[in-house]
Image (cartoon, rainbow, N blue to C red; front, top):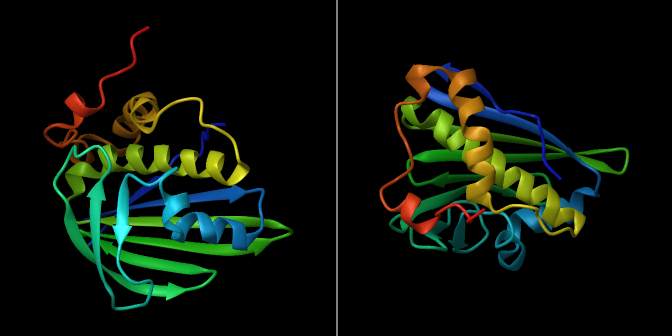
Length: 182
């Protein structure tokens, strides 16, 4: 299960904003649990999320493969089962869910402090959302998040342009996620 629904980049006041819309063939409550419950986050999120699930709570994030340093953030909005917004390091992430005829529409926005990482992170969030779709469907993904990132990154570089493509993976990422041998 892969999506060809690419994110769209907008530049707002010098900040890169990548927006995604995904339609998930599952009830809103099921998608909400996948977004918020630690055991379900493991299937799709690049980091753990430690902290109370209440607006204003301090959060701590850790990459599962230690490919980048841990960092802190804050839960900005938590309105079950429709809105989750958090500060993820320097970035702002917003997940909005809308019920639609037994399905769920997920609008995801990543507001990035640095425009130059929009293609890199847009491809990363694309991979994560594909993993989320698989997880909610109860299916194993046919690829890892890094492999999916490699598949879609060039399309994001082409779509978003050179200004949004100046930053590559963080130091240590390539070593932690070597491609599978053919």
